Length: 182
Image 1 (cartoon, rainbow, N blue to C red):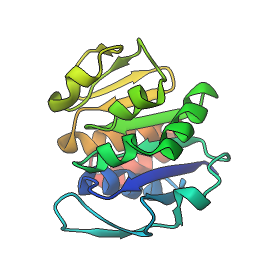
Image 2 (cartoon, rainbow, N blue to C red):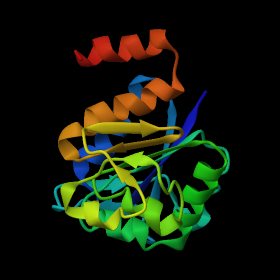
Image 3 (cartoon, one colour):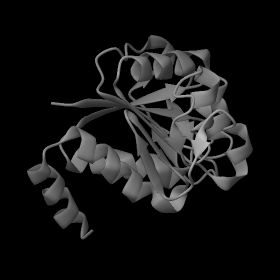
């Protein structure tokens, strides 16, 4: 069974976290919610949702994962980017060829971690200027080697399905598509 870690920081965007959680569950992928910021109960960017995580990043061993997911949201993506533990995990995953997926403002974590420079990416239009060493191509979901980026909240399901496509077989992915009517 594939294992994925989603890093959840205070101020995360609800749909950007919950869509990947839902899709991974439907696909039979083991997903662990990792809290960044010292509290297992993490509040979303608009205070609409509190998400109970499975572990704190400072206590987590993320070495056995197949993918790491970084949702955006403001200030969620900033809180991810400012965490050296997050940056270290992103460096480890990217440099070892494992999947790194970031949406909205979270692609800025790549820059903070110093990985994937020169790769093709997309992100929220408000952070494009922070992606100076990357090839910003825009668009909805962009894949470049072991990197998946997406522009924002409205693309959360497409983003999650792109991640699932890398982790599960075509029959499972087809079942997920049918179940979600996509």
